[in-house]
Image (cartoon, rainbow, N blue to C red):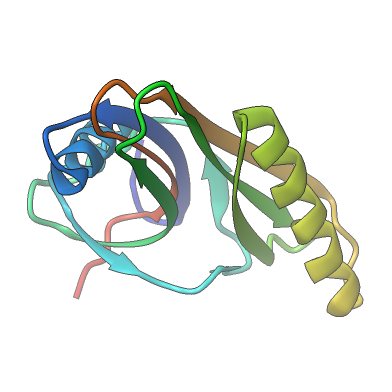
Length: 154
């Protein structure tokens, strides 16, 4: 699949010796661990297609991404994050991120935030897609939910 003009919804979780190692493992599980993430705000350009496919970016690529992550050292704790993408008729959209006590709870809150964002813009919401990750911490755990924009070409 051509990576341009696609937004990839991905999620992952991981354990590590440190929060950064756990986050790295979560990114690897999500399929975006070997690229340079360029954090962007939460707007979807008109005409872009949102897919729940694993992206195939070249290692080291610059990839615009909206993401939420959470780490914890508390053994036994359940951590969860979610992301929702809402789009209107022309494909314009917004992305909202949330954390919660479960993936489904975080997804529901993110969807509600998308609905509100469309109300504020006086636009009709046509489609919502969600993705979440949850994890029970053993030593040091991390979760990530992301919306990666098709590979950025300078």
